Every structure is written in C-alpha cells, then in structure tokens.
Image 1 (cartoon, rainbow, N blue to C red):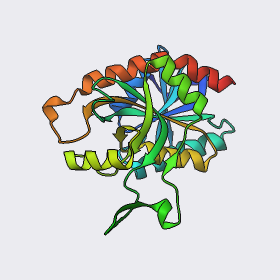
Image 2 (image 1 turned 120 degrees about the vertical axis):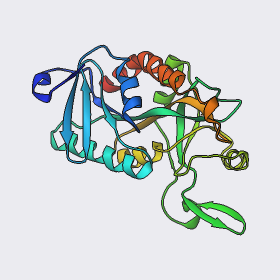
Image 3 (image 1 turned 90 degrees about the horizontal axis):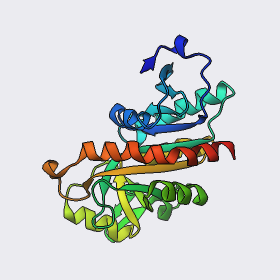
Image 4 (image 1 turned 135 degrees about the vertical axis):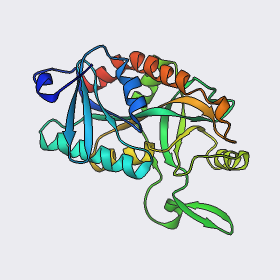
Length: 248
C-alpha cells in the first residue's frame, strides 16, 4: 500500500539509509514485496523515492546508465541535504545471464560492476577508456558485503556488465565473455548507479535476477515473471545483511 507523504510522516525504517535503485517500477515493486510495511512516496527534484516502513528506500531510476545515474544522484543529494545521507546504494533488477553459469531464475551479486562498452573501437579491437588514459570502467562493491549478500541469498558472485545496447547476438555475447571472463550477467543501469554513489562517497552493490540468456533475442524464452519473483525472494533473504551493514 502506498501512503501519501503526509500520512507516512513519523515512520521509522530500519533500512532508511539504504537506497535501492531499479530501472522500472515493476522491479521496484518486486523489491518492495519483500518487506511487509506500508510505502510512502516522496517527490524530489528529478526523482520519486518510495520509503518502505521496515525496509529500504526504493527508486525507479530509469532505463540506461545515464538516466539511472542522474536519478540516483538526485536522491543521494536530497538525502544529504536533509542530513539523512544514505550509507549504501543497491542497484537491483532483472537482467541477462551468461549461460551456463547464470541460468534463468538465478540470482547474481556483483563483485565488480563494469561498463562493458565505455571506450573506443580500434583496428586492434575494443579499448576501454582506462586504456585510453582517463576515466574508470569498474566499481567494486565492498568484498565483505558482496560475500555476505551472496551467502544469504544463494546468489552467484561475479562481474555484472553494464551495457547501453542490450546484447542480441551470439557473436557479441562471445566477445563480451572473451573480454570479461568472470561476467555472469548484463544490465543497463549498474555502472550509472555506481558512478552516482561513488561521487557521493557511498558504497554500492548490484543484484540481478536472470530473466533471459545473454545472446540472440528470443522473447518466447524470457522468464520475466520468474525473475521478478526471484528478486522478491532474494531481497527477503538479503534484508538482515542490509540491516547489519546499515548499523555496522
């Protein structure tokens, strides 16, 4: 149940300093289902945050790294100006999994969040911006947090790639795995969310439920409902980990 902002005043949330950023409302709502408390909305310049009693703050940040970064930064800035800064940002949602390591319905926790296509194409192949002498392409969640989250939720750990164009061919899937052999999943928001978190000095985590294999697009094979259910179940198991991190 979503409460108007004025009806939600005074609610104390045990995870009030954790912000979960998803791409779309369906993912946000799947995370909210893991927490039984009522939800209230808060409209911010550039973002709308859903505050869950007894749970984290939730943000449908938008699709793609640029919009996700802008929306997450807006929420982080508003919290800082309210003297209630977040202590952790979690990028969450469904995404593609690299077979056979991340099958449909499985959960992946990132130990590295990497921008897979941020760089330059050359005659010798793709070069990330770091090899061009500037920028960064990888953010690393706190190792202890990633390990605890994976253990609690039964998730696999590895690299989650952020792409601006979803992979749709076997050739590109093979190329990505060749460049990133530890890659388990791809999404479109993780690196953007991580960039915003890093700008505010806040640690980041990424959690993906696998809805489809990375490779040729076969919509009949997608299992979006199953992936959203896995996201809900996963966050139900993650709640104690997030709470202990929040109070550490």
